[in-house]
Image (tube, rainbow, N blue to C red; front, side, top):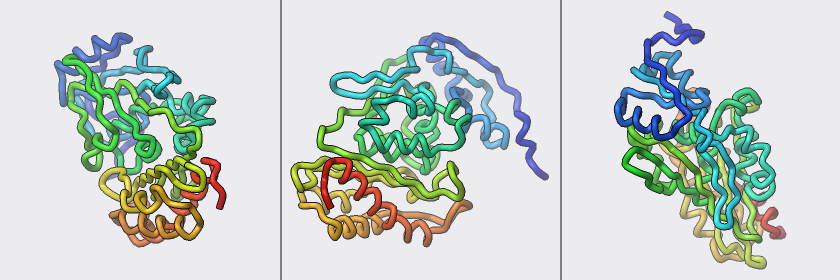
Length: 296
């Protein structure tokens, strides 16, 4: 029997408010029986397929205080309901946060980027979430809020498994906080999918901070190669504090490929992901180093 993906088969109560406090009150009341709706590009698909049947759907896109991009002295702050298209068009993101810009630009069709939100992409906790690797290499932090208050969670502690995170049923993601990057730094993002703008078979982001001809700091993150988006610390350690050349970048890419734990699924095979991880990581490392002002 085929699933009719044109309709929502389950009955649910629909709630919406422009007040964050009211939404948090509803989440406190309904807990695990509630689903939070912003762009809906993931949630509605799950509901149409019958994979999710909430008693209550709470719409949060009308909360103005969650929709912004602020370039503060110490951080770039992005509200959770900010659309992917808004992030893509932002000049600060485009100029200084290349990996995030490239990740958002690679995602789905224009219509989906207009609807989808950065908070939704992270909150879905998909191992293939395209915004996760860039935000991991930027050492981003999430602000989570509930009626009990707020807490800050480093993104590298947020994901715990496929579609699983530390987000509690009474919480929502309110803000993504990205520390300011060094002046001699560069970042990059690369992704392979079955077709253009498809969900990633594999994606990778790199951040490098340059000091002369040395890499002062390097952070590397993969998606679609483990139960969660992951960093590869052994590869990073090979580059930190080292004189950078193509041979060393190749060796680090090989080390990074050895750290991933891919599987075979309906988008790709374990063998393919393992093989191409070295290639795309080496390309991403080269791009990040050159954007940091380094020579090869």
